[in-house]
Image 1 (spheres, rainbow, N blue to C red):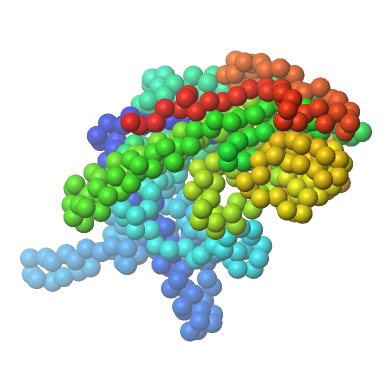
Image 2: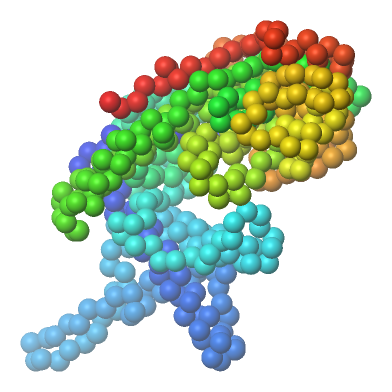
Length: 510
């Protein structure tokens, strides 16, 4: 089993189950805060004495919390007998038996990961923005969530089951059988055939509803859904994917053929901004701590959740089409974090979801045994002529066409960038191409198909019916680089389009 995927369902719990879910989420928040409190106390003692060991790992926090929850500091009861004599009885956390022990342990592991991210960020080992020190979670300010591991009983039965009592149900340890709103057919078929297993379940409260995300370790895709292997000598077939704002995606091969163009993407944030402003004003006009303010905040949260779902659904559709039809994709390493400092374009860039789109392409291409490369951040894909290679010194954002002063080529700006990305991948294939490895969580240099661990054959592959999608066309034909044919793909001549996505397919709230 080499593929990790997640199945997310919306829960329909009863009133009693809602109370149990909220109790587990509160226990996870309490354990996180208490472990952080013990950590800060140990750090203060170490500064003063110098001989105290400060816990950092997940096992340290688990052992520390397990020892603390049985002490007098965690809970005690003063008993007074008939003679007036008072005795202290240590109870510890009296309510710890009402929740699963895994909730405390997973919260301790989360704190350990947060501390590790903080230390790596300070030492320069972590890319991206600086990560601050973990802070205490406040009720009402943080997202209620908890995580449960899938253990097995002595008879080999899993504690997290799907479709046990009802086809649309999930069995969670400590909570019982919870009905879900969605269909669980694909996951049940995957588990019943022994081609996957549930590792853990994460329950969150978002948008006024409870959601469960089941992390599943599954077998590879069926060979019919995987791309055909290529040799090391074959450096063709790369498709450059250029991301933009006016045109979301333009994909083209190195010979100048445009294979995909998405022009009318649903701008969920911009379309719902008017409603968002009105809902935000309703929250601020309500008295703090009142029920009306909580209801207004819940309406605003549901609106944000709907906007995020519209954007995510669109990104999944476009990434699926690209991955199913092309076995070699290359994108540019954009500094999205730096671009957000531009106050004029920050909202549009956030609404486009460039980073999430690249992440989806990376792991979906790895599932189908394809190749995904990330071009150098400083590669001038938009300013370079795709015909002669001349770099244009000045090219503003308002210029939607690229005109070369040397060879007089006139071509669409986005198409020119996509062609240059495909050419860059063919030239740097096997040398400097950075392939995103979803398991490692970062770029891996020279990670090609022959260097991978190979297909897992012990458990078999995922059946055709388990994938839940139709068989798509074969990858793009492997054509040689024909630079002389790029002049034909100018603005005056039509460019072939493989698919288009319209914004009418994503209606918004009125």
